[in-house]
Image (cartoon, rainbow, N blue to C red; front, side, top):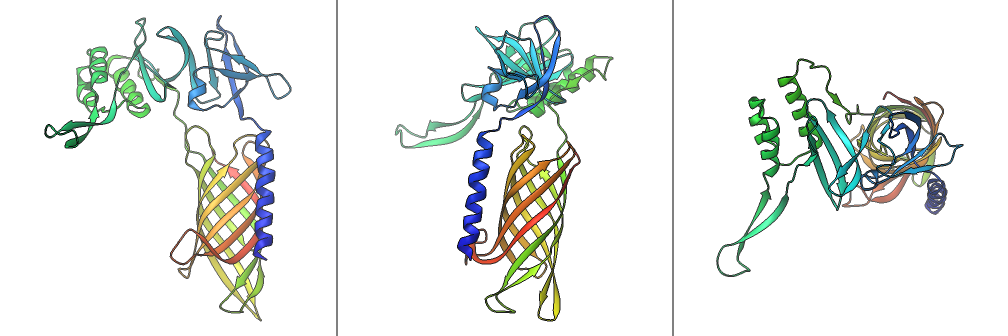
Amino acid sequence: MLMNFRLILIGLLLFAANLLSAQTDFRKGLVVMPKGDTVKGEIEHQDRRRRGTICRFRIDENHPIQEFAPGDIAAYRYLKSKYFVSMDVGKKKLFLEMLAHGEIDFYYARYNKRDHYFLKKGNQDLIELPFEDEIRYTEKSGLKSDYYQFHYYSSKHKGILLYYTQDAPRLKAEIEQIKTPSRNNLIQLAKDYHAAISMDTANIVSVNKENPRICLEFGLGISSFAIQKEVENSMRSSMPAAFLVNFCLGKNKKVLYFKTGMIFSSLAIGNSDMGKWTFPLQLQFVWPQGDLRPAFGYGINCYANAQSTVDFNAGFIFKATPKLGIHLFYDLECLPKKGWAVVFGTLYSQSVNVGVQVNLK
């Protein structure tokens, strides 16, 4: 019987792989042409390395995809999200992500296998904030095999930040605490500097901040339990009801979620019913694009009687509206292998679940 369950899982995985290969992740956004006019449509969501060199844009799924290089357009933006500006970086043009805009602007790009942060103030030239964060070694004696290991942080970026914010001396202590430039500390510095020298305290724009996405999930299903203690080697049916909460773990591509909540199952054994409360602790991957989205989850289920099981689920989420989805999942639950809390052992239950999801953000 367990072999049949595995075949079902393999089939779901193969179908999902074919579906994923046919999908691209386009999101609502706009491009700003060189003369300032904007064109609304959809922009492909890409990894950090490609965002700086190309923008793939289409009006909608019925129109062809256009590819824009830095210089072809002035900027592009995902709706209510990240904003990228075409700028000269040395001898080349790149799309830089604008982190904050006000009395002082900060930008970000990823290339040459490292993060790069930039500063621009008024009409002055763009300047990079150089920094090094690495493990270095120094010799204890004349022998090369005898050395100290230490973590090295460069401080050139502090000098640049202090120079460009010298008209707000109260920020010196804050800048001295910036060991390594990052999104959060540069955005905070831009806000503090703007507030320190500008009367227009409401005009600073932080463009990369997104509220965490939370999804509520309600479901019903049909489960088949292998009850080893009460009835040896037999299966009993149940209809579980679930209330689950999914917390998005990623800032950029919303594909990884932490799932928890409560599941109640009423299990019929002989002439009596036995209630089972389950509290899942799982990681779930959801493909972020398309109306039919494959999803996979893995983790543990904690029962009210202190028992725990290992759980794997796979299925699909149909996006009915931007806020509402309908899901269908196959769930395989096993007792953990002896000595391994998260490794499959003996079959415990299988189930098919259907329900609705409500996106709060």
